[in-house]
Image (cartoon, rainbow, N blue to C red; front, side, top):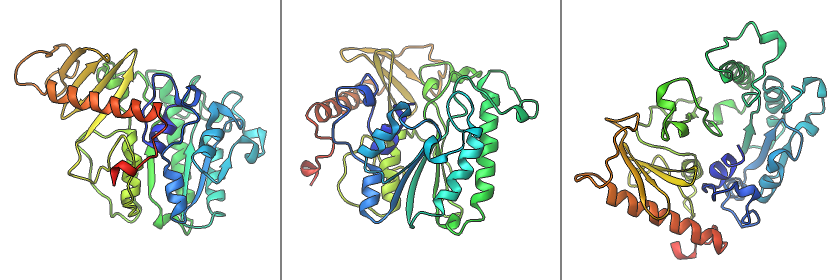
Length: 321
């Protein structure tokens, strides 16, 4: 979970260990909230856990977020789940109330918590919500219910029609279906952009990653200033669509239906996910594959990332002019 916020709000990859606890934690970071703040947006972060949990309050301050709302600000321990923080249902309603107090336009981020281990739901819903086949599924049903109530309340607010809602998971889980039990499936998460006015429609059939949200949202608000991002706007047809993951000592590049695995020195595997979704047939070294192109892209990506991280140049856009 601690890797999600830098990926979403700063478009940067996990540097082997979580950024928040790494030697690079004090680096200057690209910041979606700071960019929007410079355009007149009020910025806020909501997280129903005890203040200080997972270092989120320190991270968002580093990113220039102006207002933080946590368990302390919520101020009512009767809605504490006994483990993580305030139940999603109650904290999301609190968020709606607080959003109405912010000067518009605003950019707010909410990190829900009830769908995390140990996957509890409030007692009154334990028989009402479906349990599913794995423990997380009832907790997801509860978060779904909480989001439904959030939107029911948000629809009554004057800012609703002018707000873009972005729904994205912080990370995946090992689901019950076979497609989620591979190294590619392990990173599959939902990313949804919901526009109440209906101007944004359709579904991306290409690869999208968390790091794409930073440039995508700046694209949507018309920010054309140079930026350093390790993703690209999903609306920029000229940019390649790919995702980079880190798993158990190796990196993965997913692009155009192919998956390349690389440990920093050698290729570990190459799979055609369109014909081999279970990744049973390693095609590295075979002719007529995109191995060379993908390896070059992944090496360039990692080299640029490592150089900028080590020299604290993640915000230095001078060479992009």
